[in-house]
Length: 242
Image (cartoon, rainbow, N blue to C red; front, top):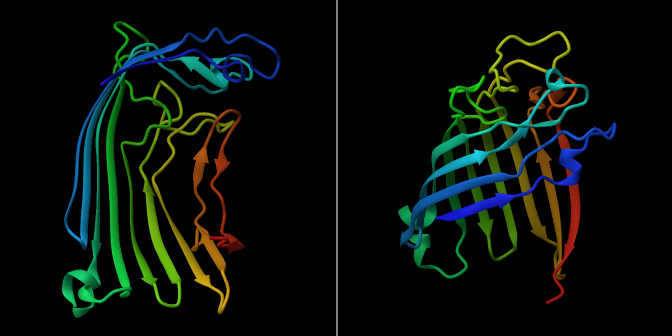
């Protein structure tokens, strides 16, 4: 449990035209209760429940809040949620590899988070509405593999983001200028691999993000629909100097 306080930053409280947005400080009480464990070498888990009670929270706004407005005071808000994750090493759990040193590993990872957000300002215009850019469901599911001997690893993950509102009024239809309206849910799949180059301390890394080139809406702030990142390929070289 802790008491949170954060004064507004200059970059948030003054817009590009020099207008003061009159943002108040964020104040909150935050509670968290969690458990984690590793009952077996091939199994790990974590689960956390949390509750945040804001006296005032600064949230993204859109053009309807005023020319070039990017943030606004939401007033009193609440966040209630749970986050859970689990990792299972399949080869260690179900095969003879589990007793071998430097044995191959194949992990299944799953993460899920549910969070309910609500404006609780008594008698306020947006009382009972969900907060903008706060999807109720997010999660990921993937596989991680490693060959410790040759120093090769790879992972394939699918990430999910649930639908989210973009304004405090929870407007569903998309406005003509694209600044308001529901953002639908979407999946994105990423792949990463890392390999040690022979007889060296150099590692080659390759990441392919958004493998299927999924077209999705990532934001509508501050001036209209902004698409998510398209397919990207990253190649890098790492050196282990130890």
